[in-house]
Length: 246
Image (cartoon, rainbow, N blue to C red; front, top):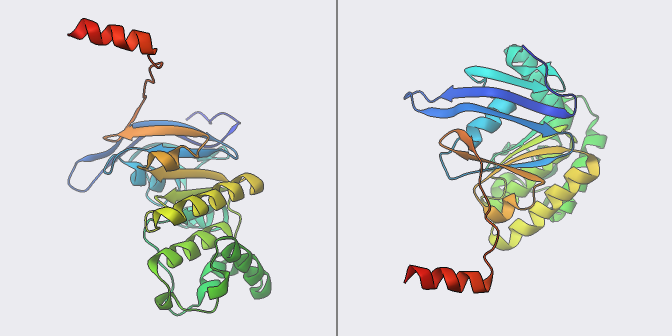
């Protein structure tokens, strides 16, 4: 077992995972993520993006392969140790907003901080700050059932950002949002990540969302693929090529 490079905050080697029906979700995926980097994991639906994020975060252990966080092997951790790691160092955004119905908006956003032992006052201050950045600060005392789905997703994003995680795993974070809302939320997310030094691993099938990242890793059928970008063809060359094909 060889430790990863020092400049990678997150590193994975040869990850394999199969679904219960035996179909492969990941087939030997390896990657490294640098500290403070925004990495997009792109690919069509069913390509293995969500499974990769779950394995990288320790939520679902890979069946084979290694995952390292700050040179500590996540793949050898027990269940409770992985849970503490996710609570204390990682943030997670699902494509579908899930909130605690008995708690109001700011309490939902502050919940991870309070679970860490942060005082209620400090947790509320941090949560409200993020809720205001995400344009839902006027709803902090509402219950989840009083919100539209897009508003609930903003609360989930605030909840993930409020504890200032070392790594934020975002699985299609703007899926429930209207197109007009996506740009603002993604801009807030990426700006927050850069200003707070948060590393982001972002799963998306949307090219516009992936374009906001520093780097993109593409998956297809559970494997990393490399896209070759050909240089643009000059207009005269294009006409010549067309004439040859006639």
